[in-house]
Length: 168
Image (cartoon, rainbow, N blue to C red; front, side):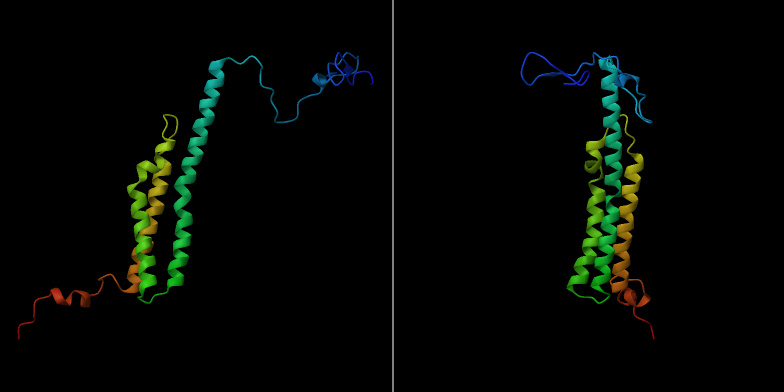
């Protein structure tokens, strides 16, 4: 073998990679931009703090992903409502009530949804507000579909049966 490339020691396939030559070593080469060497003698408190910070960052990131998940549901439900049309039939009513039920059940389970991400270092107010707002938009979409189907009593003629008879 060439000098500095490796020296055979003891066993047949064991290679010693220690550099005994006068050639420049890898320690003389500067680190690439953005690379920092971690010190080998970090104490356990620093490692545990870094681990806790990394876990808190992961929890915050996952909480934001969960908070933005209803947006995908909004797009899908909007497309399904558009495909159902504006005629009153079983499919359009089923889609509409599904559009109303999903946000209501999601808002009822708000605490359970964000429970895995609860931590002292993670602020869940923002993700919870976004989750609530997107579900309220989904609920408004369902109410709008009820209105386009004519199932909401919005005209005076819808209340005629509750008016007293006219006195002649």
